Structure formats: structure tokens, C-alpha cells
Image 1 (cartoon, protein in one colour):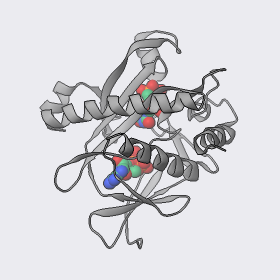
Image 2: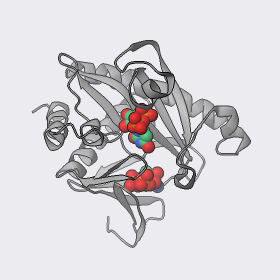
Image 3: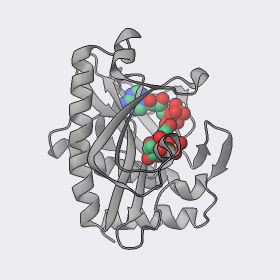
Length: 236
Ligand code: ADP
Ligand code: UDP
């Protein structure tokens, strides 16, 4: 499939049209941002890790009954996906307290929850992705009631599948962000990426962070962490 004009350049990926109006190519960059774009940097090799890891996760999820945008990996950095209209919600699932949850509610990081939590942010850069609940999402017409029901069910299913999978490679899945989109016929599918940029991964034995927190928090060993989590996923 041939890459045509660039449709969009985001912080971590570019999106290109193809000769098929229902398919686009995503191209993963090494650019990294954090704190609402205030912190910028490069993580060498990140684009390839995120692309390949995300594709492996999408394939696993398809097998487990979660429809995704994945079509075909084209190269280390590029993947053909079904074009969707993104539902402007960031869907966050948490198994263990960390990040903004720990800060907002004044608890330590690392407290496991009895049940996973779900939250939404409104995907809107101008408003800095404010937190909202499903009533707000309905009031703003971001999605229908039925779509929100489907998205919640898929998000918890993704959590069950990925939690078990990561535990099998010695990694605790702390939390993650998902994005969903609508195909032309309105079908909801999982889109965007599943990677160390969008998930928190802690080594099951040592709690060492194997994700973007190493970049956000200047912990060092950023490239090594991306390499390590990728090697575990790839079974190397
Ligand atoms: P951001 O827009 O937050 O800077 P990225 O750099 O990751 O994020 O850009 C990728 C963009 O492509 C995001 O806006 C994402 O919502 C969108 N996207 C992801 N998957 C698809 C898809 N299958 N079809 C169309 N757009 C997609
Ligand atoms: N996350 C993301 N994109 C965002 C915000 C969060 O991928 O714009 C992911 C983040 O990597 C983490 C989870 O969602 O795995 C929860 O993030 P949190 O709300 O704790 O925010 P943060 O601490 O990253 O500001």
C-alpha cells in the first residue's frame, strides 16, 4: 500500500492517506513529549518499539474478541490501519495507584485496587484534556450512550487480556490509556497505540519502571527501558 499525502502530524506519530479512503498509514516518531507538551525530547528507537509492540498487542486483542484498527505492519515504524473517526475521549484504566490518580487523591503510588477503575478525559488540546464522566461526554455529544457502553466493556476486556499477558512476562500493568474510533459504518474499534508511551509497566519483581515515566521523571535509562520491555514482549 502506497503512502500518499500526510493528513496529520501529532506529537508521536504522523498519519498518511493511502489509495484506499478507508485505510491510513501511521508512522511512529522518536519524539517524546510530557506534561501537556511542555517537556520535549527524543527517545532513540522509540518509534520502532511502539509500532511493533502496539501491533503485537492489537493482534492479541483481536484474537480475544476486541476489534481493532490494525491491518498490517509495513515496516519497523509504519503500519497500515483502518481509518477511523476518533471518539474524542482518552479512556484510562488503572489497576494500581500512580501518576495523576495518586496526586489528585493524595495517595501513594503502588497501591493495588480491589477492582480496576475507569476514567475519561476529553481529548482536546486547547482545554488540556480535562477529566470528565460519561454524563458529561453525553451532554457534549462526544459519543452516544450505546457507544460509551461498548467502549467501557472493551476497555475492561483489554485490561483483563493485557494484565494476564504482561504478568506472564514478569510485568505489572499499572495503568494505561486507550483511544477508540468509529469505522465508516459506525462500528467502534480500538485505535491509536498500546505502548510504553501509553501504559505504565513495572517489573513484577523489582517494581522498576519500564515505561515513559523514566522520561517524564528524568530517571535515566529511558532507551534501555523501552528496549527491555520490547525484548520481553518479543520473547527475546
Ligand atoms: P497526538 O494527536 O495526541 O499528538 P499522535 O502523535 O499519536 O497523538 O498522533 C496520532 C493521531 O492519530 C492521534 O490524534 C490519534 O487519535 C489518531 N489516530 C490513531 N489511530 C487512528 C486511526 N486508525 N485512524 C485515524 N486516526 C487515528
Ligand atoms: N496517558 C497517556 N496519554 C495522556 C495521559 C495519560 O497515554 O495524555 C497514560 C499514561 O501513560 C498512564 C495512564 O494514561 O499510563 C494514566 O496517566 P495519568 O492520568 O496518571 O497521567 P500522567 O501521570 O501521565 O500525567
